[in-house]
Image (cartoon, rainbow, N blue to C red):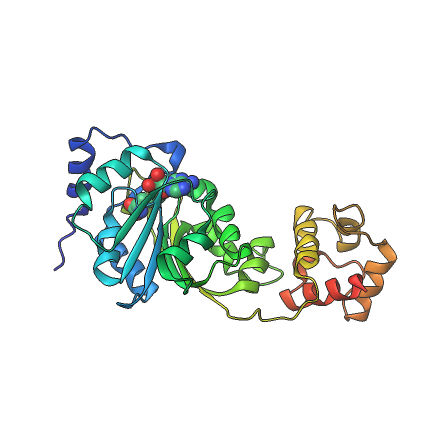
Length: 287
Ligand code: SAM
């Protein structure tokens, strides 16, 4: 039987340094060694990998990442935690760089150049839930060289990432994730695996980054403007959602004609379109 000593270890660290987990930084520390093992396994870390960990917290997962990978870069916003990690908890790890920064402000591309010679990294994180989507979209949109992202996210966000067209969870995040990666759900994680317990269920997703997008589109930015408009007003027909949307100039008739030429109802809502259909309508309207 594997003994889970993470709860005692976490309580010990919080007491030793008189720390209170900070809600504003989404600090829910993982205290289940079985779940940590699942994340590390799902990430498929090899000994020559360079891993970026976002939000190492009190270093629970970081220690395992350092033992598996060639190099680990950990970006943590909380100055107090960074001090403890550097001076005590992870002092013995010589393949680790700890950076005290807000991940949304870091030039990750530059970091990958300096730390890994521009070669692709693996991202592993128990993400702060208040900024899950900006972190993921930021990494994708800046085309950071990545092989995969293995992420603990809110269960509801995991469902949105892996959703199918026409379902209630299908949205702009689904379309973006499927443009850049292949997504699968690696594990569901209950609230009692964290300290303090979050109010929501969590899940681990693995996004395998695609070398080339699965569809060809002339102007990805225009396609994403359409996607954003379509789901910004998801109860509206695509015609109505697009005519007043920022950055898109087309008439109702043009949208209706485009949909008809694709074999779809002119009154279709955006939520029924697949990624390939968003690419197609973007190309038609762009002409
Ligand atoms: N990895 C640790 C674990 O699994 O126990 C902590 C995970 S906790 C859910 C999220 C971590 O992200 C916290 O350590 C928090 O301080 C850090 N964090 C929050 N916002 C951040 C940001 N903008 N940039 C970098 N780190 C951030």
